[in-house]
Amino acid sequence: SQKIEQNSEALNIQEGKTATLTCNYTNYSPAYLQWYRQDPGRGPVFLLLIRENEKEKRKERLKVTFDTTLKQSLFHITASQPADSATYLCALDPNSSASKIIFGSGTRLSIRP
Amino acid sequence: DAGVIQSPRHEVTEMGQEVTLRCKPISGHDYLFWYRQTMMRGLELLIYFNNNVPIDDSGMPEDRFSAKMPNASFSTLKIQPSEPRDSAVYFCASSYGTGGAPGELFFGEGSRLTVL
Image (cartoon, rainbow over the protein chains, first blue to last red):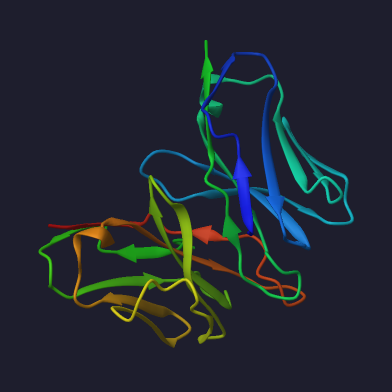
């Protein structure tokens, strides 16, 4: 079956450490993958997009990798801060010829001081 | 720009009643998406439009759900009749497509629906 899986458990990280979140997908061939942040009671907010021909993308303290062979994306937050605590969602286009975007279930990240 | 605007923010209704959720996308965006979010099922795509035309409604749960986009600045999601299992947060998102793909999505704040 087709699905997108993210860390099923919440992630608790000490402030200052690097948080690494995982997004695995099966039976899709996405042209790109996106990461969003969602705070309680708010809509998701776009963070980064990485294309299938890109191995890595960086934005400030954020880094995303995309391995189409492993069908996996890793999302890293370096020098994590309590303000980074939120739910992080990965999203992709399930078929690179289509334009729909579907989401994983999300990983709740907590950064403790 | 004010961003994607959804209304109402909260709706409490009784089973069997009609519910209409509204969305105003960001001006100039040509894609509009409706999602539903629950704890159990996460963020599910219901339907999306490109240039006001419905492209894929395969995520619409059943015939009780319908969506329209009469013009580029307005869309509605209607549930008739509503059932308790429809209780969820409904999000609208819009984006500007490049190369035939929607790219970055801009979400509204959501409409929290409770059906008693």
